[in-house]
Length: 83
View 1 (tube, one colour):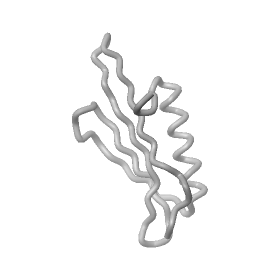
View 2 (cartoon, rainbow, N blue to C red; view 1 turned 135 degrees about the vertical axis):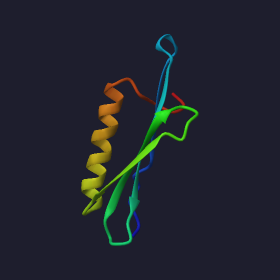
View 3 (tube, rainbow, N blue to C red; view 1 turned 180 degrees about the vertical axis):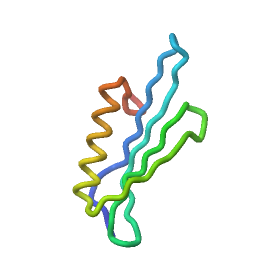
View 4 (spheres, rainbow, N blue to C red; view 1 turned 90 degrees about the vertical axis):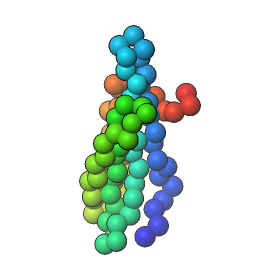
């Protein structure tokens, strides 16, 4: 299964005043059964962090979930890496 042009999202939130340096990554991954998973990673910058995978029936549902998560994190102060 080939996914469309949804690119992985890599966000960071750094605030030295409160000793905060976090990362959040979201990407879509196809499964062997024709479904699509939203794979999320998060944690302190410099660590392996944690990971979670949620599987959806089709790419449209997974892409909607990815965009919703990205919007949620941006509201909380996360910015794309490189900005």
